[in-house]
Amino acid sequence: MLRFSLSLLFWFVIALPANAQAPVSKSFFSGVAIGGQDTVAYFSAASRQSGQAVEGDKRFSTQWLGALWHFASADDRDKFAANPEAYVPEFNGHCANALSLGEGLIKTDGQTWQFFGEQLFLFYAPRGLTRWQNGDFTAYLATARQNWLHLSAP
Image (cartoon, rainbow, N blue to C red; front, side, top):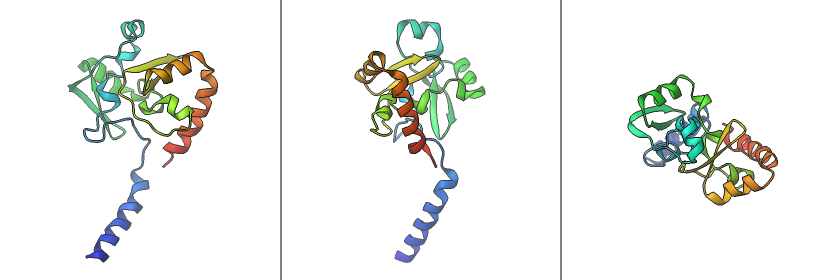
């Protein structure tokens, strides 16, 4: 029995790199990305003006990068499915501030967000966003990207 378990473990570990992909900020149990927020909606004029996230609906969902992404409408789901890279937040929704501080991959719920340039960033808490707004976000971004490359590499 022990020999079988060790053999199974060996094959599981060997198979991991072949299936490895960049991690997404998702719920451990449900696999829903970025707290179920509609990532396409962040790009709308209404969301940018209000600063409010738009909750997705499980009826309008799609799988991407091993996560379930929810959308407020079929139209938003279809836009995402046609070009996910255009709508996915930087660092696949992990906290940009945590990455810039070397704190690792911290999941977000999609409620705290901001565009810096044309890039969408999510934050675990408002305090991290405030740090980016009031500090040198270009330096923070450079560090976050370096840490992301290290942490997301297969």
